[in-house]
Every structure is written in C-alpha cells, then in structure tokens.
Image (tube, rainbow, N blue to C red; front, side, top):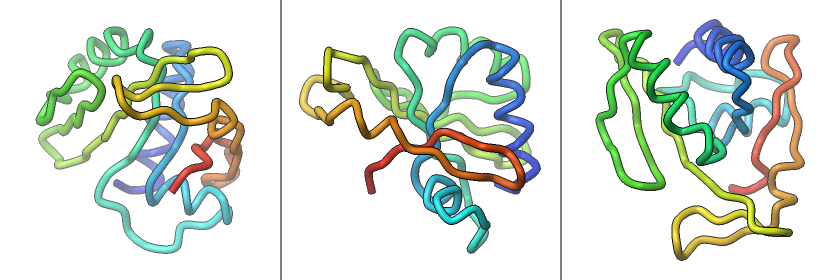
Length: 125
C-alpha cells in the first residue's frame, strides 16, 4: 500500500464521517512521521458502528472482503491493495475487540503524521 493510497483512503473516510485509527506498519511510521519501509497493507481500527457503511463504500470502490470474521475484515481490490480492519466497541474506559480482547480506551489517543497529514493511530503494538 503506497502512501498516496493511504492518504486517498483517509480522505475517503473523512467524506464518509468515519474515523480510522492506523495500526501496524503505517501506525508505527505515523509515530515517527516518516515511511520507513514498504507496506503490504493498511491496518486499521474502526468503530464497529461504522462497519456496514465502510463495507458498502469500499465495495463501490472495488474492494471485496477476503477474510470476513465478526471483528476482523480484510478487504482487497484488483490492484492487490489490502485494508485490514479490526472492529472495536467502546465500553466505558475500555474498548473491546470481540468477546475476549479488551484494552484501555486510551490506546485510541495516539496521533502521528503520514506525509503532512495528521492521523490518529493506535497506541498498541
């Protein structure tokens, strides 16, 4: 996934009113404000309430679900761009990812840079 693809995706989610939190390689690179290596995909955390809207609009862009589990969906398009979405719900001072994974909601407090754009990022490895 190229930086231009990431920035285009973030503009797309802005238009939809969806807030993604970057994780994985792009999340780590956002922490330092510079791309350190090529990335095969874009790892995200997204509020589960936005899952249907995101899926519908990604389908309009040619993305299909390659892995479709209740809390984890990987989308890909014909150019092999992959978006790896981890869904979460807020539960007071925690977020949950499925029935067994819980983290402090503060993991959503991270920010970083992709190019000149400020992005939200997950504060978990």
